Length: 146
Image (cartoon, rainbow, N blue to C red; front, top):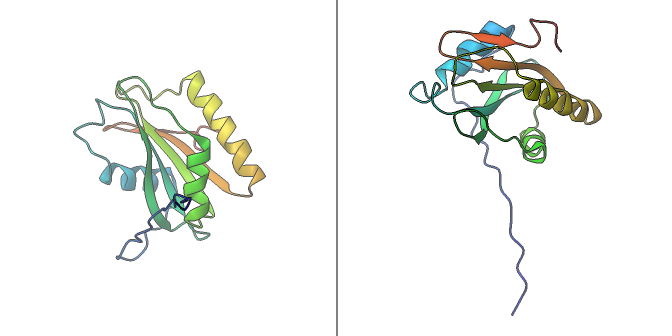
């Protein structure tokens, strides 16, 4: 019997409409909220990445993880596999806090530093890390945390 090797695939389905350009955190928030399940945003924490080309046009959005009511896990290897395979030049990280509290936790800050350090090594730009709710958002970039 022959040994078989599993093939790992990442499917890429670009948007058919003209690409949306992100120029600020509010543009990102509006786009992300339109692509978030508002029925679960206050129930279950999710972590997504918004993938961008060099002109800051959206290539796609990828849900990296879904967790529970108080947290979700993020595997950096999976995050960067998606970023690299999509040929993104930059990305925006985003997650929701089901509580509606937009203040970043110490865990949020540690994860952000870990991801930005890895991105810098790979010459990939992290444009922002956002925490969102139905009513608003917190942007690390706007608050000088980037």
